[in-house]
Image (cartoon, rainbow, N blue to C red; front, top):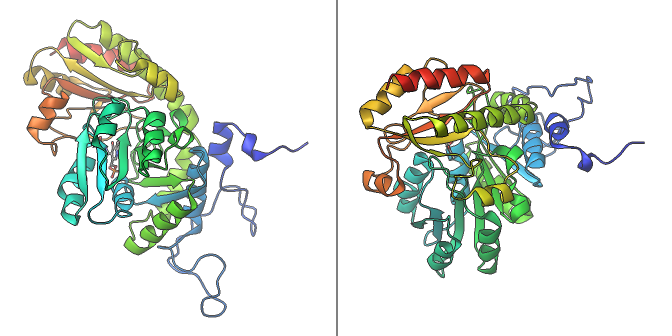
Length: 387
Ligand code: P1T
């Protein structure tokens, strides 16, 4: 007997949610609708779509699938993670106050500090590993708390449930950047968050060939605001990017398992290595918030940050000596990447601030891909022996 699709497991939903088959042709895979506009029977009378900035059938399938995977009711796809973030901030008005963590992707900090502030949004950046810091930062005009957990690049965690509860009591919205965990390993809506965003460029697309972002929510009124802004500001995902990201979602479960299995092996290998000072990976017992990681995440992912012994020269030698890992910004693709946050992804964070956060010359970030595990370990071993 047929049963409810709500009972499907993650991998089944990743493959089937948002689409059955094309009613007119029976196509098992969703068509790529490369059209900007849709015919109308009479002015204002159309079959759900009028113009692709407002909505496109290929984008709709992707949006419904990602909302389903996050356990949310509504999903919206944008042309980048930054477009998704800026759309959330555009819900606020001049004079509103945002509390954000002190560590986050450098581009997000740059947008908050150099763009949103110029539009009258106030920010307090504080260490949100401690709920008390959130409590103490609340002002009468606080409208939003921005959590990136785990943070990029130092992999600090925030307690999503405790902060969301406290935020609700104070009429503050909670938004979570869930990029590092993907919907497979963490679902902030189920922990009380109002809005979840991803840089879909990372694990969601997973093949380093699409720049994209998504926002999901279960609140009808927030969905209306995001949808209105998406249409009015226009930074929406193209049909082709939506098609590629949706195609990638079908393998999210198997990819994330492989990222995690390789990530764990690499983290343990680095932890034992004589040239490595300290490894940050939420799956290690040595991670200061390992217990919280086990509580609010279903796994630990493939992102690892570590401190190398020595100085910038040693770090440069390591970064120049890898052969399977590629020295490049970004993360979450099937291929392994290595980068130097202080010079690369977090160069837009002021140097004083980087120092406070521990983003120094010895800090190296890995996005562990899904290549053969022994090749990754061998590559790091040979590169570490040359630095
Ligand atoms: O690059 P874009 O799709 O616009 O997403 C921005 C973004 C948002 N949030 C997090 C946690 C991110 O890591 C990013 C992008 N990060 C990188 C490019 C990087 O190498 O860290």
